[in-house]
Image (tube, rainbow, N blue to C red):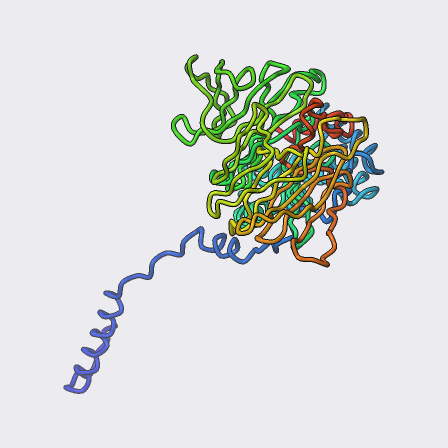
Length: 478
């Protein structure tokens, strides 16, 4: 059959119009194909892990190894050793049921969930552990092999963002906090929030520390291990990065010297002997020791001396203060350079130059003085003073029998460690001291009369809490 179409001018015009339309449609660029990763990226951005308060509310909160959850946690560690991860998860849940603040159980529970494929249950215990001890578990949560699959999920991507945000918050908190000693460890105590941040975690106990404010770093000396109680080790706290190292063994029971070099090779130096040149080694930012040339001499600036019996003394004479210092940095009077005023304490008292420190506004000089040199057992013969730089007038703040350490917090306030622990003192009359409960000292060692040997800090004689090393176990390995 033949189809016949009655063509005319109007029909031809219509056909041409349709052809033009079809041609236009055929030449239109095709839309780009949908990106396969668009949906996951959107999902990643949609997941948010809200911030938790960093640190812990009080010092006792760090004592989970002495509380009810520890027996179940020991069972979890035994299951971890034999690779039974379902049993690890069950035992960690039991530990947290008995003690909701057991952070090691929370960390191990997060690892256990990842090991058995329960990725949707990792974030909760992981955030609890890292918020409580960010220096220990923050970066570790990004490096641990068991958490790789979790980190590849949308929640894992949100966790990476959370760690980056918390790292900045943590570094800011410990940088403005007061560094104190408690339970043989270093803690940062934030005055405004009253929160505690544990800076050191090692099988030994902290003996002393040297802070370099310009570098925002602290080197601390501790026992190297629980087994080698007399061997010393050194560790590093990086306030800028919010990171802390473990203890690097030094292979000696002392004496040693710790100093800081601002010139290459920059960093903390550790030397054998007291002030004598010796076999100096440098501790780098990766927590490794490097040998320095044999003839290297101690760098200029403050330095820490640690003796054979784990006693410690800081050497740090103040700027813009002159005196006829004896070989123990003691003087009966000092002269302030800005005003030419002479400052002294009642005779036979002697000012300890290593304790002298300027207030931030340079208006006052605080120092510790020994009141006499008899050193009768139990005698209250050490006192903290503050002098007015403009007038030379001196005000006594506190006396102690077991030594005193002090540190400025502001133009008119300072922290003092004495017989009754640590308190914040104001220069204003009528303001009562504010105690920092549970802190037993400052990072700066206490000074006692030179007629007696430096006292060994009670905290340095403590055994570490619990019976497991703080960083042992597969779950802690990066």
